[in-house]
Structures are given as structure tokens and as C-alpha cells.
Amino acid sequence: MNRLRNRLLLIFLAATLAPLCVTLWVANSLLESSLRYSSAIELDRVTATLESTARQYYQRERDRLREQVAEGRVRPEILRKPGEWPPEVREFHESGDAERMVLAGPGGSELHLLRRQDTAVARYKASLNGVEMESVRRQITAARKIVEDSSARDLKRGFQYAFLLLAALPWLASLLILIFAVRRTTRLTMEAYNRMAGELQQSRERLLYLTRLESWQALARKTAHEVKNSLTPIRLMMEEVAARHPGDSFERQASQIIVDEVNGLERRVRAFSEFAAEPPVRLKMVDANALVEERVAFLKTAHPEVGYSIRASAHPGDAFADEDLLRAVLTNLIKNAAEAAGPGGSVLATTGVEHGKLAIEVHDSGPGLSGEARAALFEPSISFKKGGMGLGLSIARKSAVLCGGDIELVKGELGGAGFRVLLSAKCPDAVS
Image 1 (cartoon, rainbow, N blue to C red):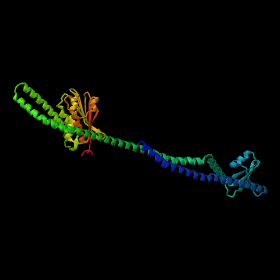
Image 2 (cartoon, rainbow, N blue to C red):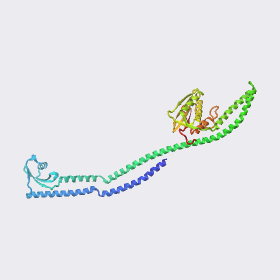
Image 3 (tube, helix red, strand yellow):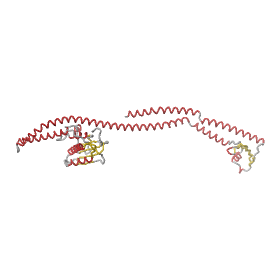
Image 4 (cartoon, rainbow, N blue to C red):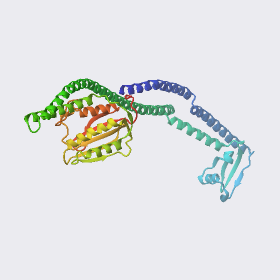
């Protein structure tokens, strides 16, 4: 999965980096071409031309005004009242200069020649024919500021950085989204794969278990048939001998011992017959909580010295199983738990949901299971309790598998052993 994720990222990088680099190269080439015709350069040239023209025009008008004054074609305006002087006249008078040329009028559209006359000021006026020199000067100053600002900034580098940022941000966002999506997808895929692998492994283990049971069942059927045929006449004969010798005679006691042993052997034969039988499986929806409560109530009377408790889930759902087989499984597990707990011990039965499956657990406060017992717990004819046949757990697991589930050993909550029955809440595909 990590290899797949890395491949997807490499494919994305290969598919996006090349177009991104080409785009940056083309944009940089266009920027180089456009900067050759920069507006700032043209503005600088126009400003210089305008400034030179304005200066020449201003100088020409000054010279012409002086000529007109010298020739007497312009009559002066005598300003005698200092309180009524405009700012430029007052400034001229205070400066001590004998003569000054100033711009006046709206926007500097007039040219005034100021001359000192004792306490008065003579002002000669000339129109600049609508040319507002002050406005021209302000525009030239603003244009010069723009050119200086443009020169102070590295325009090309600014455009490159701006374009790189605008191009890289969407690409990085796409990369982060892809990484998040790939990780999430691979995580979900890995979880699905692990779940499927686990289910396949469980199915394989169940199949192997059923295969092993088939060989044991064939041997059990043959053994049960042969032993039953031999035991029946022996038991009948010994019962006849015991009937013919009343009282406490040796013959009657010996016959009775043989009859008891034969009955014990017949019980074992019936256990083998039950193990070898193939019961019909009728799957339906079963109320797990109700069935657990019924089994615990039923088995309490067999071991009244044991304390029973139930921790049922509020909504465990219904198990899809054969009710009789499931009842037998629970009977076996609860009975074994009570025997392991002993007098004064405790048995706990729980229901819940485990990884999408309905789980029924049985725990006891007994001594637990040894390593040897855990290794061969569900094998037929392996018993670790006195008088046991070693078939109970094998039959229980077989019944659980036939219901489409299984039995597994879990950590005991009460200090002893713990068993979990896993069942499907819907019709399993593996069970017909």
C-alpha cells in the first residue's frame, strides 16, 4: 500500500511539474519582452521632453515680458498698500530683491514681473495664453515620482515572484489534497484488505477444522457402531446373570459391576455417535439476549453454589443461527464455566457487537487454562477435567461453525477462562 501511495504521488508530480515549468518559462519570456516596452521608460522620456519644452517656453515668455517692459508696451500696476498685497508680492518686498519674475493667476497661467519702487511695488503682467505652468510643473513632478518609484523597485523580479506564488499555491494545494486523499484511500483500502484477509483466514481455519472433524467423525461412527454391537449382548447377558443370583452373592455383584461398566461404555458410545452425527442446520434470527438469559436460568439449578451474572447489551441485534445448535453451544460453555468456577465461584455471560459481528462471551473465576490446554482446546478426545470425554468443546465449536460463526478463547474477565462465540447478524454466504 505504501508503494502504491508513493507511485500515485510520483505520477502527480510528473504530470504537473512539467506543465508548471513550461508555464513559468513562457511567462518569463513574455515578461522579458513586455519589459522592453516598459511604460515607465516611455513616461520618463515624455516627462523629460515636457520639462525641456516647459522650461524653454517659460524662458521665452520671461524674455518677451522684459522686452515689452523695456519698450514701454506694458504699463505697470503700482501696489502701494502692503495690507492688500498678495503673498508673492509681500514675499518679494520682504526679500530685498530689486526684481523678481513670478507665476500667478489660475494654475500659473500669468507671468508677473515685480520691481521695487521705494515703498511701493510695480507689477507688470503678461498672459501665458492659457498654459498653466504650475499645473505643468505638478504633472512633471508626479511623473518623475512614478519613474523614480519604478526604478527603485525590481519590476521584473516582482512579476516573477508574484506569478510564481500564484502558480505554486494552487499546485501545492492540489498536492496536499492528493496526499490527504491518497493516505485516506490507502488507509481505507488497507483496513478493507486486512478485514478481508482476516475473514479469509478465519474461513480457512474453519474449513481446516471441519476437514479434521470429518476424519474424526468417520472414525467415531465406525467405532461407535462396532462397540455398540459388542456391548449390547454383554449387557443383556450380565443382566440375566444378575437376575439369576439374588441377594449379595459374588455372581450378582460381579454381574452388576460389568453392567455398570457397560452402561458407561454405552454413554461414551452415544457421545461418539452425537459427535459423528450431522444434524440438520436451520438458520433463522435468534434473540441473543433472551437465549443467554434462558440458558443461565436453566443451568442455575445444576450448580446453585455458583454465582451467575449477565451483562447484556442494550441493542446487540439478533444472531442468524440455528437456535438448537446455539442453545447447545451456550449450555456447554456455561456448564463448563460453572464446573471450573466451583463452589463460591462466579460465572459471567455477556452479549455485544464485535467488529460488526454479534459476540456472546462466557467467563469464569476458575483457575484458567494451562498452555497445554490452550494448544489443543478444541481437538476431539482431549479432555482436561475429570470424567470428561474431550468432545464437548469440539462439538460446541462445530455447531458454531455450522451456524456461520466460530468460538475463540479470550482473556477472562473474572480471572479464569473466557470464551467468545461470534455469529453473523445476517445470512452468511458460506452457510447454505
